[in-house]
Image (cartoon, rainbow over all chains, first blue to last red; front, side):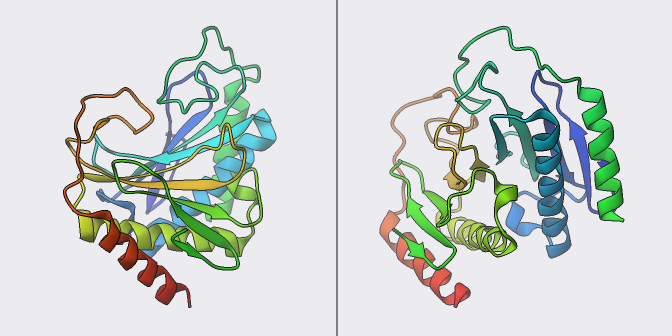
Length: 123
Length: 123
């Protein structure tokens, strides 16, 4: 668990790339069923996380997605992508392109920084 | 072209499933680089389109994504997904699950309706 408040919580998804997931505490099937406070909290969290990922990892691109076809509950994925990651330029759900990607920068300082930013910006 | 205003434009993506794409007129690499008016216009358009897709198609799930790994320019995908579509429950960028999906409801009345909704809600 990276962050939680009364509306949303944010988890790390175990992956070779930086990948966080944002959930609403109240289960909703579709994003349009969220109330305005939940929607705004998710957009704000995505914006904060994206900027922190760009600053820290200097990725080739940020990817954002909300599917929920299996777990039919609103959750958003946000990932930093790199030209040599295993799926680039495919989406991470696409066809694997290569092996052997290792993230250069350590994950922990990023997680600590994004945790601090979320906490200070949501307070 | 489904809709355009000073900030964004919306196109249909040719597919067996209902699939629209939202672009900013001003090219931006990452969503966090959009100005607040562009961000709000995209969130509003996604909300309008999602609700119209749900009402008209009664899909199993709405999927939303923004990648841009190849075309590095902010654009959002929004799709209505069905349990018998060719990729369900995989994302549309995943592994094909079956053949022969045919959308039951005609696309044109939906496109007309969503065009009207976008025009009236953005004015």
